[in-house]
Length: 175
Length: 257
Image (cartoon, rainbow over all chains, first blue to last red; front, side):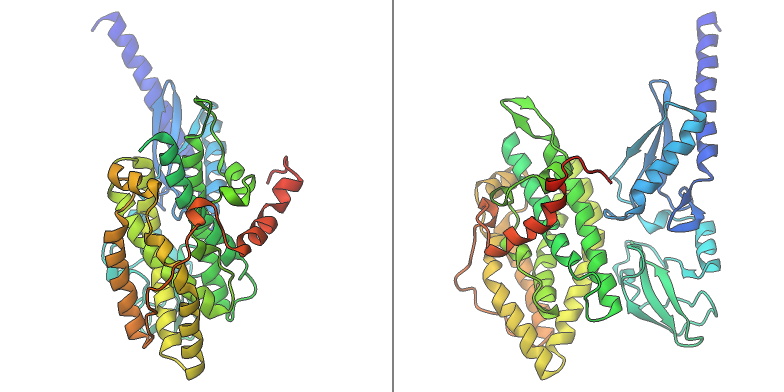
């Protein structure tokens, strides 16, 4: 290997390390509306790439009007800049965010926190509102639950109640 | 389609969403039930989000004397006068009672969904396609919500039946505008960005008819239709809406969040 090539490899490793360091830093950035889930768990952080020697954190909004998007961008930028002061945020609209990107681990954390996770996959239209599908109660696990409203405390959730334990609960809509 | 037409087409998409979102926001704290308060304001939020995306895209195409002079979504929303707004007359109609709001939403949601389905698959403007692809997921919820209320009210008590029928009758004259193409619609359709409105109407009719039938409501006749929103000729109520919506940024132009 020539001296030139060796230098390039070194440079390449340094850049890879930078991306890795930013990614590690972003593991602790939580969704402000679901503070027990990280933005990577949620599939909001799409990637960290390198451009012209600095990192670019690529985010996608969950819902177009989700007010948390701004907060998330600021939190991500602050975290990334700890490692790479010239890091940038880029919002990618395509492909559109889907609940299919929410990890299994994140779904388990939702249940543990009283939120019924999305059921099934987003391309199945029968799973649109949760109306007519069975959403187990996150508290008592009963399957006897009822949709109260396809809308909830945040854009991403629907309101349910459990007919067995009578607790109201939220279901993370499948989109 | 030239750049000015492209900019206008995107502006219309943003204006429809902005004005309806602003209207729905008025229900906050006033809806007949808590769940509806949450539903209507969540829908408003989706609409305002869509507004930001489309107005930003439209503003980026702005030119003055052939030179690029981008405008932000806020500049477009808060610093244009009534005549410069190109939203459909339907979406600016007052909230009225809950039935009027639901009827307006039902007529628009079905149109917005079909339009977004077209925009999401065209390749003339990929940014617009990405926004539409996202919007489709949200509009399906809105459409489901408004359709179920139409059925519930139409098939409910004699009182709810007659009132929702009356709401639909009153708003019907604003539906013709959705399918009356002007030069921007035609240029948009030939470029691929916008749907062919006559083909869209066939699908809209069938969607609307099946819900009205299930709700035991009568579809009004397509009689005289009021148009003009796309040309900036609005009904009286838009001015009042804008006066309220724009008052803060116009009084304090440097105000920031």
